[in-house]
Figure 1 (tube, one colour):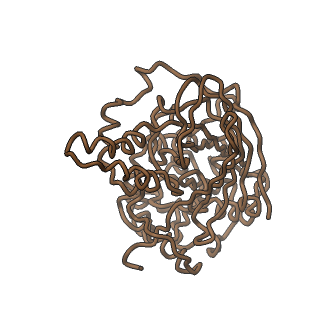
Figure 2 (cartoon, rainbow, N blue to C red; figure 1 turned 60 degrees about the vertical axis):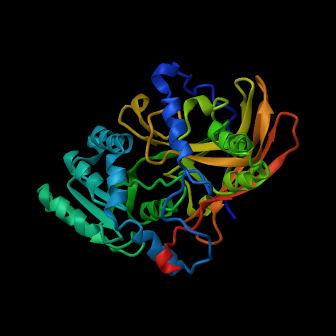
Figure 3 (tube, one colour; figure 1 turned 45 degrees about the horizontal axis):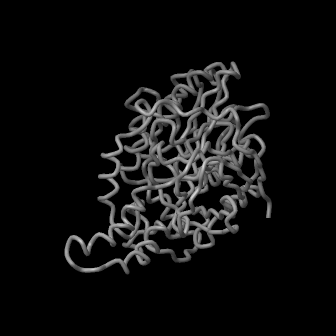
Length: 395
């Protein structure tokens, strides 16, 4: 099994914390939001249900069906950080795009294809496997670009383009970067359709991790000790059950506030889209080391990613970041809860190794294995996964 191995201990170039007033979310509002979450989990995607092994054909059908509803496209287009960064990256690469042929992998509504024409593309092949392609055709026609954008219904692995391309653009990133495995399709397109010396947007992805302390989870666990004072019924025995429910092995997609991050994030993996292989994506792993800011209790790890867009002037490359220190995106962050909190003090070392690999139940689902040690505590391991998104209608 191939692997991508990367080790970088708390990069010194990481952005410093900005003032609380300019960067933090309203803590009171955030806590109120979290209190509304049901006991079974914090925030989860509504279309996820219990795991079960699915045959590959059904996995693919369920995956593409999840993109047929307007809601997911509204969420992505409305994500200003995501959409505007892609727009600016495409326009800034107009020298590489003008008069060239472009392939948009997983085009969705076709917005990136439109941006490419605005940047001067001669021809754009917008490949989209699900029925949203019908809406992409309408959008292309409404913007008078039907002569330069051809929407092709199908997967990039099965369609047959009439020519090679000079540019590939794709918004392929999933939760924790690799959920949904769409990067595999981009690499297939690169190997089959991209001319030598061609451009890939974005061209690089990086993964980061940081220890966090989620006060809302601790507050919810402590709730069961307060019931007796309120109602005269001792329900403190529920605390262990609540901990198993809340601090389980699910990858929780949630927004992490800056004040809950307990160290500078550490980069643990980097993917170069010009050279990485599908075989290497079967195991993306790397080591990390952080040092805690001060006294706190670590009860989770936060995983997030960045992608980089090349620009003609390298110092001005564009970065799309899902860091808790940056404006929120629809990807939020992937939160991995420990079985129990661990106390740390100033400069306590948090170190370990993270491995990311496809789930056995569904190849499009990512699993994350964390092997870690906090301070002098015994080394621990835990494997996390995103539950199956096959709907109840298919159960």
